Length: 345
Image 1 (cartoon, rainbow, N blue to C red):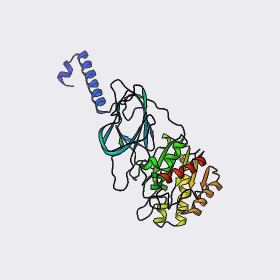
Image 2 (image 1 turned 45 degrees about the vertical axis):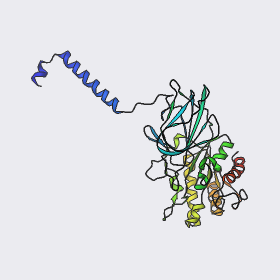
Image 3 (image 1 turned 60 degrees about the vertical axis):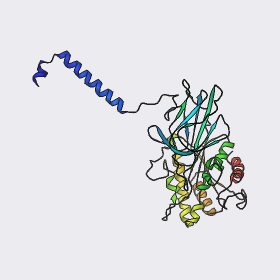
């Protein structure tokens, strides 16, 4: 013990200790991000609903890499603005109105150049998929509202339909990508929420020449293997629709490889979604028809009666309902949705 410590009065020592503890606590609190308050429009605001797979690991910056992810929130006031990090193309709909396109925007994005009537409103935001030469910064960093305004919990469907696929499911070559693809259109017809675990240029079976296999990537939060495994407790899909095989044929995946991969995917889906009805669609180009049916039959024989095959024969004419013989046009996707919606019921 030092001389100064020996001579320091006891009450002075106590005050010094108390001040030191308070200083450490203040420094610790300052080093940690403050949690968002419900209603403030930040990404962690509990009034904001996220559909699809959003990576929320970075505070204040929520990212989704799969097609068709969207955000829904209610808000009061007469204006709403988005906080965007870097340039991106996005779509918005206010109060159920038509989707407005906002190409190449960043920073503070004003969605209400004309003020809304006073009251409570609903906003939906969807980001353009990253594909081909497009590399947008698809992040959601919250909204900015009028002074004194706040977010409100929106009314959203309890049913969630998940679509697993490639560029066809992602809406490649359609006017608004995922928003005009058959999955999104089908779910909207059924007044259901939806997620599209889809991206262009993916296979079911992972190939040696680089075709990413959804057999495995379906388990991930994002497209890359470096992204974390998805936490399936965040939502449970009511129905899952699979449309895979078009790229497998191009990459010369054998029938046996495809069938075994399909069975594995169905098994993994059942493990993650115990009560979900799973549909395996026949590809519109009629690739791997027997193998897809065999995978469904294998699961049925294993006691899983909620795996079903969808025959798409005659749903579209590839000569007139596609943009290039493969990817359905807006009208083609509407035709598919008109046939698929009654199947899902």
